[in-house]
Image (cartoon, rainbow, N blue to C red; front, side):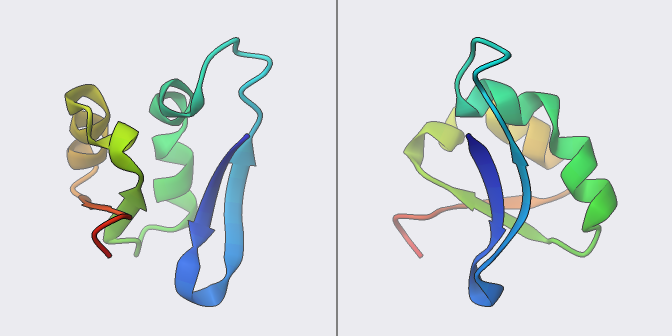
Length: 74
């Protein structure tokens, strides 16, 4: 399951099953960023674990003019 959370509010904003895609969380995220951005256009920074620092995933985040922070650093 890929979940998008608003950490300070302790709220799940969106979620997608990765089982049907026969994929993993990062590959699932690459299919759905536009949905998150359209629903929550004021989200300036996305966080995730180290696997989300892979260049293809960062390129998807940056094409929406958002920043990324590794959750281990925060």
